[in-house]
Length: 181
View (cartoon, one colour):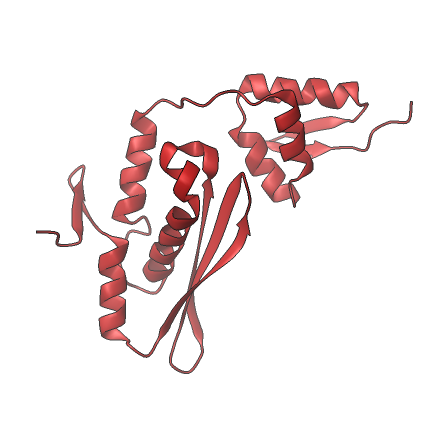
């Protein structure tokens, strides 16, 4: 029997499905909405909001999933990000106890810690394309942090080859304009 409660390392967590059910039972006239903030070949960012029957937003939740981070995310990053955003939003509104991480998120985090990353190093061309397509300095920094040392070196080499100044400070990547030849 599925109770919606999962015991993970001696601590009980509610699944997002159970929290949504409790929310709907408590407030059938309230709205739980989600919005895709960004979705591309690399990352999915979702936002969830809860609105009262009077239209007042009482809670938000955000989630980010990288498509290359796991086999599941390679096909279902959008769904995972949406579920996580909903879970965080419900926790912010009081459904889910003291934990913002849902059972789904905690299980995923434990699995990722126990499973060594098995992803291929991206080619120089793929890396340059992904960095050039970063829509903001924040996304660029998140992307940079996810690179392996080998991938970072490929990017540094390519930047130097093109005469661009590449600086890293406290995990934040800044790319200066290419110098004129």
